[in-house]
Length: 530
Image (cartoon, rainbow, N blue to C red; front, top):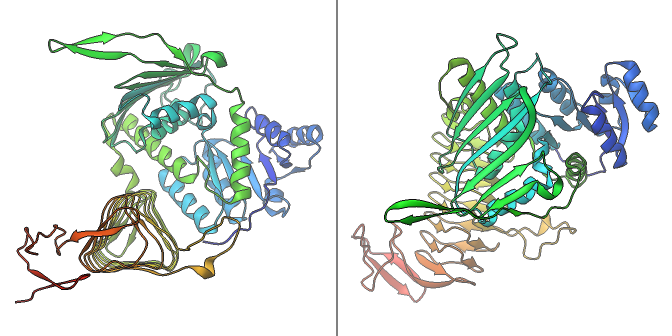
């Protein structure tokens, strides 16, 4: 990945139509607007005069060194081409939804942005709405309990389009919110629609989403509806919530702590009064624009970055296929279509692999993971979701890295290592955000067959011996002997384990395999070979 020096965003807004005019207003208000672009010269000139910035053509904006970011509000069929050209010109990109009209195009754009170290952000506006931000926090805090189902209505009379149907025009916002609440992609999508004004452009659609975690969701969108409605309803087993964007700010988000009691084997609903959730009023678009500026200046991932946009695009793609085939589409049929084959390895299309990476046969790399340059992953490994590896990291054969694990430079995993969800490796002893300490990285070696439990922390400079077992939540601050079972903060040895991971009793015989072990000294165990 190329290193991009962080600098304040200098934005050219491309497309000054109905929605682009709002982008111009907000980026100007945030003092980041440096140019406007529109195919209609008189429109561009009018906005240029109003906001005291130059009017540029698309080619001029791409070539202008004073413009380092582009905010694009163009017809959806132009998105893929314009994003590709902008990234090639070294510009950060804010693109209105959807990211593209084909999942394969979106996957290519995301990989290109990550390779170049550029911010690619998709305009899923409601992710920046104060009511949704609070609703998402309530879900994460468990205020609604376990989610049961979600439904969303986005209805209005017009604006009718011909370049995209109602699914692609209205539903991206709702899909984005539902994926954020569910925390995963759905397993399957089924869409039905009606074609009233044009035989090939759906005016109304109903989309059904089924998630592996048990959540179901449906989205009803229409531009042939007598009144405007924008409502998201979230049902949990402890409470229910309604986000109604058509109401005043004081009423936009309401929590209903309804409950179900079981009496004599029968469910009895217990209604409770709705509780309005206090919000701070803010313009979502201004907050979205500020978020993009922050992402560019701080060189950080945006909330609705390219990968989030690609996940939404996968659901849209599946929904369109379902609409056309009148059948149910599994997401795996969509997202695996654009996968990258590395020999006999499998790299999910929602993962990113940099140049110079070596991946052994039989290895699988799943959603949202990123393998950085010059890293080596062995054969038959399983890399879960949202894993980051590298750069310049070696992972041995038959390793399993579960979700949300980062393997930083200096960490080496030998064969057969298991890393539980969200376990943490450090690489410096005294990190500071404002002090560069890459020359102080300390090596960490995890030897063959070791197991690291969920949320454990491995402090850099340590060696974890063969087949050791680090308990969930432990903090390892020093070398670990082979076969040692470690737990606590800081971690200390609480016993011994065998090759199969089973805890050994006083006889030091593995209860699973029957292997025998002996103590060589107080902190050293070895197998008794026949």
